[in-house]
Amino acid sequence: MTDQPTSGLAWVPEACTLPTAEQPLRLAEFDALFTEAVRDSTRLSTTHLRLQLMGGADLEPVVRDLTARETQCCSFFTFGIVAPAAGHVVLDVEVPPAHVNVLDALAERADAKRTQP
Image (tube, rainbow, N blue to C red; front, top):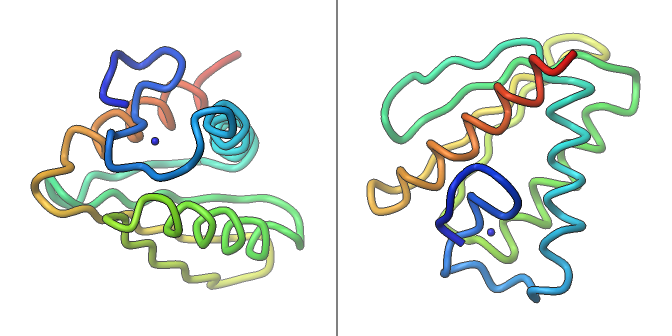
């Protein structure tokens, strides 16, 4: 995903191999997930973000699919997914120190979308 402010494709790093034309679509998928499912976010370290997600029975497969596709184009992301109960997903997002700015922007975007009225 370019390193820019939090509007638009803010957290799309230059290392992303997703074609530019597809980046807004992927961003929209993340925005929808953040808006609909994120209930809490916790920064466990500068390189580790934990998101608590709640939703329907299809939440876990949706998260697994989206994060798998994201890893294909941004291989520096490490996603950990645990589903402690139906409709509840804990998503751990980790990056190497060189990509902390990307995680910062992702965390800001998740929080902004989660708190939209």
